[in-house]
Image (tube, rainbow, N blue to C red; front, side, top):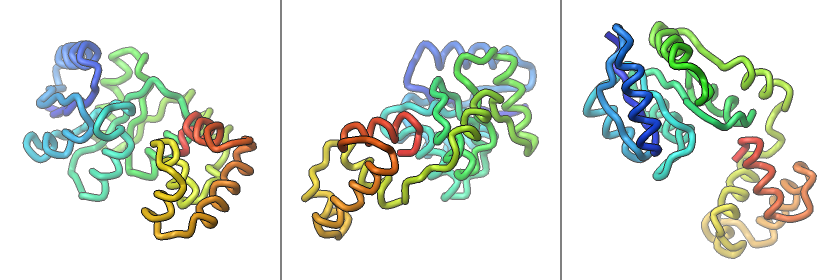
Length: 201
């Protein structure tokens, strides 16, 4: 029996997925959570074999949770379930040790097959998402540029970013200008939006 943890903030969707997966003879949902910041405790308490994480959740998004589980050496395999086909997400997921990446509108049979495959040590990547990621190329932003764009996207002012990152305000503006140039965007708001659309921040 493959023990599953489901993390999705949409209660109806999570319940439907749990019910459908529960019909599979070799799958058992042992935990359900609605927030990303509840996953680590649920993993520790229930010891699932596979964690199925929605990418967009309050508390912490699925990719951040996957990175935290990977860093903590969690035993469970991770399968990301998403309605977002952003190429940067797939690359980031693979870097975080995620072994499954499935579109949210995939049939239950496909999700069940992905779960079985990652549990057996394999990988399952949605073909369309993988093709989009390869076509998009590599993320042109440096780690510092991504960090600054994330903070700007959260509404943080330049002066505060400088304090948080121990940089001068001029250096923060330089990183921001570089990111805007790489993304081909005229201002910080557009740059944040473009980076998010690609899944790069």
